[in-house]
Amino acid sequence: MTDNVPDDAEALGRALTALGIVCTVEVRGRLAILVGDAAEDVHPFGEPAERERALRAAAAHGFTHVAVELRAVPRATGEARAEDRRAALSRA
Image 1 (cartoon, rainbow, N blue to C red):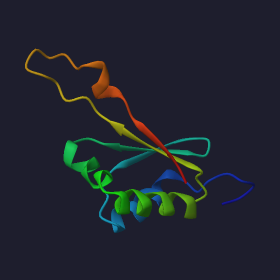
Image 2 (tube, rainbow, N blue to C red):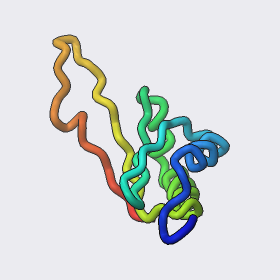
Image 3 (cartoon, rainbow, N blue to C red):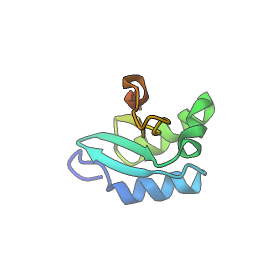
């Protein structure tokens, strides 16, 4: 980390993968957005201990906040409900 700018998304992605959390990391300033392409990718965040591990990894890479983006799963009608697109925000 230099000049209060977090390390790159790839470094955090590698750290999360080492923890068993498979996702893509997008960066918005000091916010790390963890994007899973399938429900099982974000499943670890159902457990407080796993969320804490992800937050610690993000903080170690200079991020102050973490969001988990939940991709909408198409319904039989092809429509996603608004609540399917909501994401939680946690502070590191």
